[in-house]
Length: 354
Image (cartoon, rainbow, N blue to C red):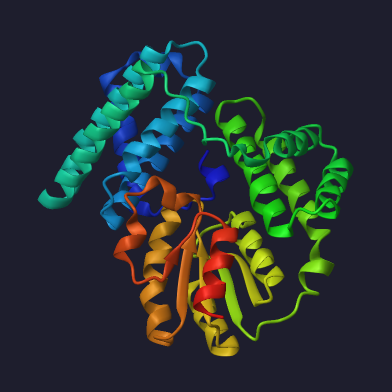
């Protein structure tokens, strides 16, 4: 899963993961006989990711992030470990978190160690709550356009790009505004695609195909998006730092462009240096940062003061699914708006930047 998430790990994380991995094998020697070399590598990769999530929570000082992640992880493991009961999965997760507490307690200082220990205790509780109450970690459905979402989603799952594209065009000709199509149909359908991957109902390849088909489908509207009257306002849109998931940022750029803004779309994994260079070149009225993976929240947190130092008058907007698993961390940052979708941001932009 590490490769899928696009995470790179430093030497400290690698060393800590190795210690946790070896400690778990010492605590449960039969794992050496049960697990194949491939399974052991997957186990080590999972340790890497879990430590990375913990370190992210520590850097952000966010109490909600890791317990939320642990519930997601429990659901993921239940869907993959079909040979185990949910109680057995919860027990394995608890054993792993106990191993993390043992090893990381020796690594961190008193204050940080207390935070890590508290997060792991909450994560154990969260995992058992998911187990005992049979929590299904799925997004709440937006019922506003249920028929349209289900139809579009089926075209995606059938890998019928032509019909998916044609259906969105049909919706627009029928009177649905392009921002509504982007957010209430395409975004909602892709959220459900992600949930289906989580529960092992579709493959990673299928999920990627659905995203790619949606990018092609939305591209059919570009002629109309860029034909709208311009507002003489410039917006920079980027995925900061190591964020490779760009569908949300692309949606923001397209919707704001439809609203008449000149959008400078920088794409995925944009360094602080390049964001600041773009500000110097284009003198934006608004900078929008998108984060899908929680780890990239640290990148957002780092670039925000640099943006404000570059131009104290510029507005900053943040959004993306990473923010949804935090304890409203955006309220601690010097930003102007956090929104859950591009339609909300478009309305705010009309009122605040003209």
